[in-house]
Amino acid sequence: VGLKTRNTQAKACATTFLLLLAGCSRTKAIDREQAQSELRQASSLAAESELFTDFVRQGKATRRYAEGHAAMLGDEIAQSAKELDEASPEPGAQDSVRESRSFLAAARANLDKANGRP
Amino acid sequence: MKKLLGITLGIMTALGGFVDLGQIVFTMQAGALFGYSLLWAIALGTAAIIVYMEMCGRVAIVAKEPVFSVVRTSLGFRWGLATMIGSNLLNLITCAAELGGIAIVLRLLTGWPEKLLLIGSAVSLLLIVSLLRFQWIERIFGLAGLLMIVFAVSAVSLRPDWTQLAHGFLPSLPHRDTKEALLYAYFAVGIFSALLMEYEVHFYSSGAIEEDWTPNDMGENFLVAALGSVLGAVLTTALLVVAVLIFLPRGIFPRILSTTIMTGAFPFGPKALVLALLGTMACVAGAAVETALSGAYNLCQFFNLPWGKNRRAKSVPIFTASWMGMFVLALLIGISGVKPLQLVNISIVFGMAIMPLTYYPILRVAADKNIMGKHVNSKADTILGTIFMVLISVAAIAAIPLMIVTHSGQP
Image (cartoon, rainbow over all chains, first blue to last red):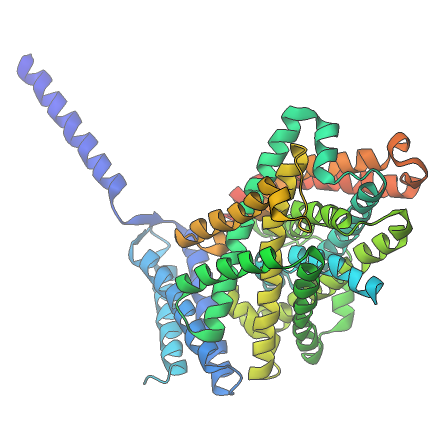
């Protein structure tokens, strides 16, 4: 009986540990609605970086503004990309997450163009 | 000329309240999501702030009591103290956000590191407020804030559809789904709240006493409240219009200040961009000064301590230490790395939640014939004040639940 009790306690401890580990894990499950919200954000960032690139190309920005805004927008894009990397999409949300990643890649490419990088 | 310059109190109050960091981004987000359909919230908030600014100016002139003395008398010590603590926490959070906003704008102008600029901004504002008399503070920030007109010129140059724009002043509800309706309500409450931020009336009524207004200035009080607020509303409308014309068709939901500033120069070029940056900095700095001084006014008026920016610092030691302390604490919050726009979201929504406690005592005293004598509220003033009080209370109840269900306005 003692051995059985110890086994049950060990199982309970292991389960608690695994649950805690899951809670501390860096991946965050995102459902379809959250994925849609991420998609809208990523698409907005891509459009924003395109607008900014055109603004710089047309010679409407000062150099300091162009550098500063590119850095701030770059931080926003990096933050969104990090959140997506740490997300674990639920079934039905994968497509939106994939699409979000490609929007963010486009946003980064636009910023590189604005910065004069190939 | 003196009368003309007197209007700068209204301009600084309104620009610092209407066109501060939070309002710039918040209004543009509303335009980017809902087009012109939230313009009515700007009109409603403007009418409400004119009615209440005029009332608290009148109370300051007749009863020689600024807002926080009135709050204490009307609500009693315990509720009054709670209101004072809540208001000053909001002032502090807003001041920290505005300091962060100044540092962002300065970075876009100079390219220097943001933390260094944050410290430099706080020190500069401390020096400006220390060295200048109240009238010069309001003139400098009020008049410099007028550079924001570049956003109005940009809006007109982009040729908005005036009929659609006019329709935006009629309240309407979006019909697509519940999520969109909740977002719409969140932005309507947020715009209304941002136009009525408590520190505007604290600053305005204290300013009326700082400037020694007498019953002869009653006409000027109305003019200052109305003109300053209407100007603030025109600029807020311009911000929404440029967002509708630039962001909405491209599916952009602006999240950072630097994106929103670009719109002021969109049809023009680098010179307009510099004007837009300077105008934004003046408004944001004006709001930082307003909130720091309001914090000190509130504390001293509540505890009946000597106060006044125009008095020697030694004769008003707690007042002086309080506004300086506000800047120092705001700087520490800014240095801790909290994003200014996160702070602003909190201040707008929680500001709404405690708003009735600031506005109700003003209405009560302004309608009291024993205190106000022949300058008591007219029937129309009291009816309008009561209608706005009901709207403020409804918005106060809805603000926090709306913030939670919409994840602070995330589309």
